[in-house]
Length: 260
Picture 1 (cartoon, rainbow, N blue to C red):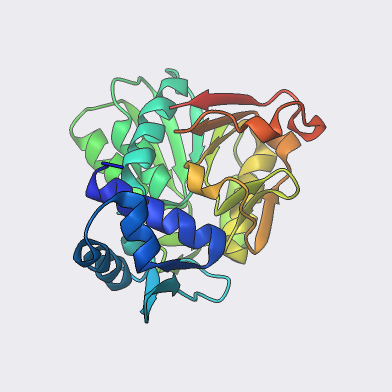
Picture 2: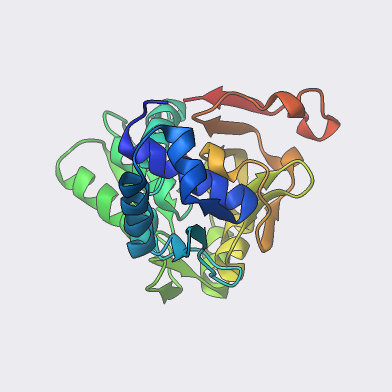
């Protein structure tokens, strides 16, 4: 099985998410690489806080219903997130009023926004607002960027709180791009952080169309806080095709699945 090093690391993380542990010997056989290569992969992933090495392999890093800090997440499954961001930007039209949620996939979307005219973007993400402000300065698109007020979370570089939610009530938003820590048939879209989840819920509530941006590692995963049931999601953009086992499920409604 010949794949790129980053793809191999992503596959290791997927296996960790499924089973909670990986064995060096099994990974050597699976990827047809040396034991030294696998141990180096595990060391790199541990340095990023994404797993904990143990004798003979590795186990999931324990975040106590939490996720790694924003900076660490920017390199996880990055290729898939870039694909999703590039595809999602096609859903933005001139004159749109948009809400963009927090998260690393949202950052990739923000990087792709160009040649759009008179759009208004509302966000509670500090990195997203920074990228968009620079794009405006370089005339990559025209319009305005509104950074919501509230309490700053330096670890996840987000803004949340009752003030953030109250501000969202003042707008008529056409399209909300939301993120997820998990996405399942049973529990819909979920996330790790209560306060960020409440802001995401408000974005869903005040928007005419809800667009979920997710990579395939989130499919079938349930995290701490429920954001929205599947019935509230109009469009999903993912790098993988629609899951076969979900076909025909009544909860999916008229959801449009777009493969990046």
